[in-house]
Length: 233
Image (cartoon, rainbow, N blue to C red):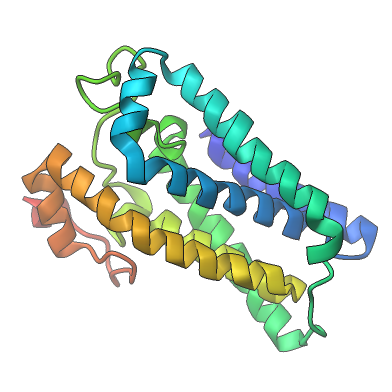
């Protein structure tokens, strides 16, 4: 639950800070750094899962967090912050209707994303579940191995991917920033590469329960009513 609370609080802090500054600075910086780092991590991780699993098996979960948070995410954040005087200025004249739409989209995305993070768990959120499968580091590193079928996952298989894209796009509209529009496009392109690899991994790991879950719960467009446990049998 703590990661979910911190996730929601980070947006409140950014919004309050930008209100005090009188312009959009912290919110676009945070969104660009967080999702820019996520794109880099996904592109470096999923295409070469077998390499990372072998390398990390001897080093443990802490080594992955140091690589992920310290090098990949940290390096991306430093780069984007260094370049921020340029890209934060890539904006169009604000249109009130678009800004209101973007603000509503961002708020809804943060709310649903917080719910999804609370159900997902911190270790799973930071790719540990993919990198430490059963029999290859999961047990000794205490990485949970289960299908998440609670909360927003009863409506859609990928609530975090939905809210991530909507949050980037909503922030782009709210702050009238072209760089964040580009980031949303890059996120969608990266997801198109990642998702087939991820779903293949889940089919191998969880077998029939995951295949049944895919049959009754949509990938991106939420169901109107939550899936019942009986439908998954």
